[in-house]
Image 1 (spheres, rainbow over the protein chains, first blue to last red):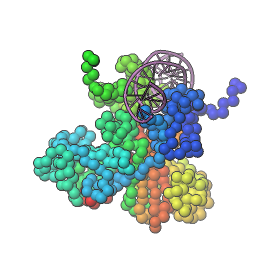
Image 2: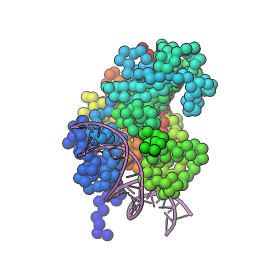
Image 3: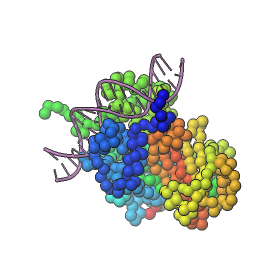
Image 4: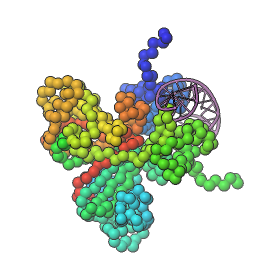
Length: 243
Length: 243
DNA sequence: GAGTGGTCTAGACCACTCC
DNA sequence: GAGTGGTCTAGACCACTCG
C-alpha cells in the first residue's frame, strides 16, 4: 500500500517508448533525418539496447523508420501507394510499366498454387518471375503461373520465353479475378531482391484469373510491407450499404 | 584455411531454426496441437530462449503458430479467408452479419481521415465503432466516419445513434470506392478488442466511399494479421493483360 | 501454486557501410 | 578502422491461465 499506482495495468516499457519516440518523430525530426544510434538512444531513455530495439522494430513495422545495417536509422517517408488493381499492375507492355521480367521456367507449381489451378495444376506450368520497381526502389517480387494449355507451344527459353508467355497472354479476356492479401515474411531469395533481410514483413497478394469458370493463371506477388500501401483503386460502385 | 565453409553467407540461427521448426510443423504436428514450452525447445535445439523466440515470432507472423500467455504455443489452423469486397462486409442488416456496433460519437476525425474527407473533414463527423467476429473469434475492429451532411439530423446518442447512422446509409448508391491495405500494429484499445497484445501485427484497410466525386464516408478497419487472409472476391473482369 | 509465454537486462561478437 | 545495426547469450522477474 502507499504506492499510488497510476495505471492499474502498466504498459510495457518498449510500448511506452514506442509512443514517446513516435511523438518525437512527429515533432522533432524530418523525413530522411538520421536518428542517434541505438546505444545512445538506449542510454538516453534508460533502457537496455534490446528494449529500445523492440520499440524501434514496432516503428519500423508501422513504416515510420528505416534501419540499415552499417548506416543508421532514418525517418521514413510516408508509405507509397502502390496500385494493385487488376490491369493497373499490367503484366507487360504498359507505358511506364514498372515490372521487369527476370526469367521463366516450366516447372510444377507449389502445392498451394496447384490447388488454386485445379485440374491444370497437376502438370508443369510456365513460371515467370518478375520484380517491380517504384521510384527507383524495389517494392515487389512476383511469380506468375500460367497453364501451358493457355499459351500453346513456346520454344524459347529463359527470360525470352518469359516475354513470350506474357505476349501470349496479351489482351486475353478474363471473366473475373479473385484476390487475397495476407501477411508473410520474406524468404531469402525474395529478401535479396527486395533489398531486405530474410524474415522482413511482406504483404502477399495472391490473384486467380478465371476464364469460363476455370483458373487459367495465378500470381503470387510479395510486396515490401514497410514501404508499401496497397491501393485497390476504382472499385465498382453499387449500394453503399448492402443488405 | 581448412574450414570448408559450406555456405558463404551463413544464415542466422533463428532463421535456420524457423525453417527446421516449419518443417517439423508440417510433418509432426497437427492443427491445434500444443508444442513443448519455450525453455524446453530452446534446450532441445541448443540455443538461448531469446533466439528460439525470434524463430517462433517469425512463424507466428506467418500464421503458423499461435501463442497464448499462460497457456502455451499451439499449431494454428490455416488463416481464414475474410471477405472484404465492397458490399460483402455489409455495414448493417445483412443476414449473418458478423459486425457488432459498439457505439457512436460525433467528433472531429483524426487528421489522416480528415484529409480523405476533404472539405467535409473539417467539422465533426459521425463516428461509429464496430467489431467483426468470425467463427466466434474477433477478427477486426472498424471505425466508420460519416459526414453529417449525408445523414441529416440524428438526435439519438450512443449505440442507438450508431444504428441510426447505419440506417441512414442503408441502400445509398455510391459511385465508386477506393481501398488500400497496409501493415500496422494494434493500438492498446484495438488490441484488447481483438484479444491480442499491444503491437500485434494488423492489416489496416482504409476505404473511401465517393458520391458525385466527393468522399462521403471513410472506414478504417483493423484486421488481425495472424489469423486473417483478406479476400477481395469477384473483382471485375476485363483484359487479362492490360497494355 | 505450478507452468506458460512476455518483458527486460548487460554484455559480447558479427556483418555491413563508409571514410 | 570506426561506427552502425543485427545476432546471440544467460539469466532474472513479471503477467497470465489453469487445476
